[in-house]
Image (cartoon, rainbow, N blue to C red):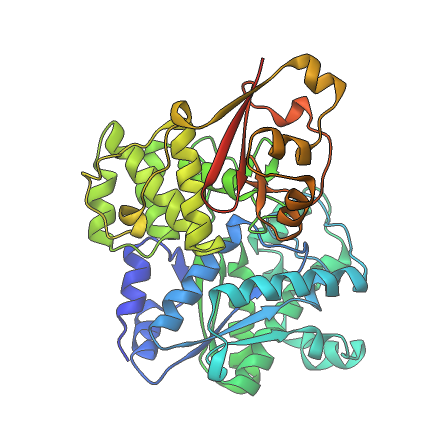
Length: 426
């Protein structure tokens, strides 16, 4: 087993801080190591901020190590104060279970759970049955309140108010690490840089209770150039679930990144070689736009699959043009193999008047009018089978066409994978 994976994470800028870099590299040279990252089910989908821990898990799993994804069914009952200026809304147990099912499905898309190569464990398995007084006697006695208050996540909240239930979060996360070390031989915990205090608390607890050396790694928290949290747009968070953020909006989020961020984002969110990323980030004008297309395609393919990413790329290119239509820029990305659709100027076009829209026209009727479908029955079957799209969002049921559907007086409808039609509002 090579320690190269640690060096690659460092080279890509994915390690913000570690408790013992030399010790970690030595450990990763030995037999496959077990490590864990926690995901509290505060929503039924992860967002793009969750991609960094997922991608780190993928790097380590490819290097032969064994990830444990902890589903925080227990810790979500308390709420993590890290990075929050006020207390999180407490979720019902039923909602936590529902959210956990959505997140578990998403994690299975990225990680290989075959042959025990990765585990998904819910910390409610041990936290929900804890006896409070016993927990305080056995675990709480190892924690110094003075030291806990120096943690950045607590210091920030002391200014606005820290509830007692949140104050327990560090103990619970440390206890997770203690349980996993004892039962799964897990000696490495990873998380965002705001988790440093919780991770160090777990390492200290393991040292006191098991006399074992454990380790921690944190990732950088991404912010935009103006200091805002990465992954936020005017419409809200950018989610991994297509039901929350459409595939085309997801693609465009990455395509519209700032020029100065392209190297960092390619290193963080793709598996392209570092040398290639360095080359792409030095390109200018249309070249840097091609780098953004590659970024958008690669991340969309990672989250939604190559076929879906191909459609998103083709659709965006048909609307706005491609930055490298002649494929002059070399890349190992499979985007180089994609044949572009015709530009919008060449797409079949149907003109719809404002009066027609006001009178009322349903999506099923629109597909017939544009020639994408021959009958209402055929269109309804297309919708039921998931093959009808409006602006790259799957049409789930027939409904009236609305003025709000039009962007710059134009929409794109699609039947299947390759049949497009644009509709202009006159």
